[in-house]
Length: 186
Image (cartoon, rainbow, N blue to C red; front, side):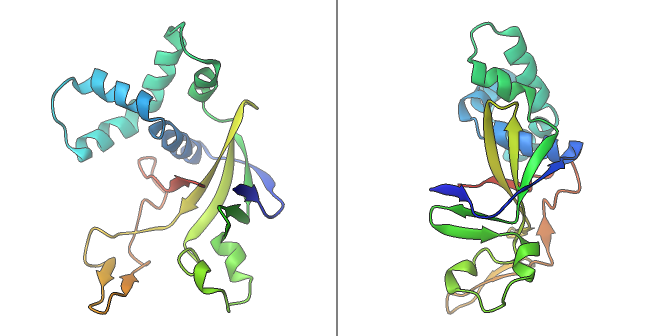
């Protein structure tokens, strides 16, 4: 079950944020993404780094052009290819599958004695936005602060099983177009 738990506000999403969020939505349309990779690289094996570098740059344009020239695509794909409108909604909190997620700014104003199940997400969720694809459909995304878990500096497992995450070592913070700070609210 997914749902809004608070009032929202409308804001104009920046071009870079819109690109990042829309790219995330498109990359999570698996068939279209696989078709793109197949057409681009053929049977050649490529690294994840290669995929990330090239596709972050031009997947959105490729997808839009492909849909524009095709006469057999669904109307949903046509709306998707246009990208979201420049106005989005922002939520300070959101319910997903029985869990209440709060943005970092909302959590700071709350009582610090929070329930244990909230700890995994508390102070890590930067923003909750809803993209509008011209009234056809809406997609809610979480903008997160991602800890660098690929290096010893950002993530460590304690011998007793505790996980330590260093949030002063962040990646994909969203200040560059190639960053991926969003994840679907599901």
